Amino acid sequence: MGHPVGVRVPLLAPFREPATMQFDIEKVSPIEQKLVFNIPADDISSRLDIAFRQLQGNVRMPGFRQGKAPRKLIERRFGARVRAEVTNNVINDSFKEAASEMVFFGQPSVDAEEVTPGKDYTFSVTVEVKPELEVSGYKGIEIEFTEPEIDEEEIERIIANQLQSQAVLSDVEDRAVAGSDMVMLELTLKDGDEVVQDHPGTMVNMADEPYFTGIETLLEGTQKDGTFEGEVAFAATAQIEEIAGKTLQVTGKVLAIQEMKTPELTDDIAKEIGYEDGAEGMRSKIREHLSNHYKTSAENQARASLLEKLIEANPFEAPKGLIAQQMQALIQELQMQAAYRGQDPKTLQYSPEQIQELEGRANFAAKSALLIEAVSKAEGLEASDADVEAKIQELAEARGEAVEAVRAHFNKEGAIDDLKARLVE
Image (cartoon, rainbow, N blue to C red; front, top):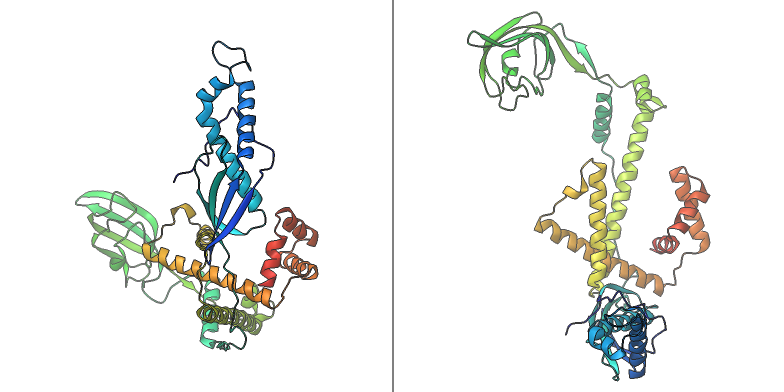
């Protein structure tokens, strides 16, 4: 059966009086409840009467002064619209009052027909709710935690990468052009007798040349002040339109050869990079950072393993609306990560396999949240005001902000309850 929720009659003012309401709750499944409402006929008649009187006072009809059109004529002309509006208001008012103390997920499903004057009105609303969980077997679970070991080679790789940020171009005098050099050239390109390009000085990147792409093999092995000549098939991707995809005669001279030189690690270089305690302090800081990173990863893996075992030991179905919320949170997180990388989040697209993986993660997150909440209730765990204040202080220090500003932000956003829930978790 259809229902008229959402139908609007702009001429009518909303009904402000609370509904006289009775409803029963039927358990449809562990995660679904049906609220069955029975609205007395007198209440329906009263609502319809008020709606028609309001409309009668406002509507203009040909042949009658405003407010003087007969009630029966109003009912014939606008009856269907008024009944639809009253039906909508009855459903919304009744459900809002009944659900004021409920926690439900997703969009309620309404099963309703239109009100009929002089008859009791019955309709139902089905909602998804939290399952009633009694978690068992959560004490004494053995979880594997591997203490991370720091690979000294990884420390040296990180140091090498950071030293590369200090690399500078240096002139090469004792060898020929090699595959990673920057080479300054005199360069002439001809197509037969026609000079296509003539450069008294231009730079070529032997590692990744965007403009004269294809010339690299001709240059390799040439000494400084040495000349070169030959035929070059320039790549179609060369960024100079005149030569892209063409085969031309090339002559030139190597004016200078430069290479990127990475400095050796010294106390002074370490300080330039940002490590005040010199080379050994740099190694120590990198080791500490890696240790904390790996330890956090290992702890997160242990937590995930614990939750997997809890879910396995306590099978249940999570509300689809809650899973959808978790799915949306995951997608928002991926969009934020894309934005940090400089990518437009709107361009993100997911394959069916990726969607399936995200749905699995969302289902896991939904079940985990419900299990954690059930355990916290079983153990009487709560976050006190002192816990909240301590966390606000911690966040303020981490962000370099005033405690009052962080506290005001949480109060303004109405997020104190969310913060308490996180602390309990």
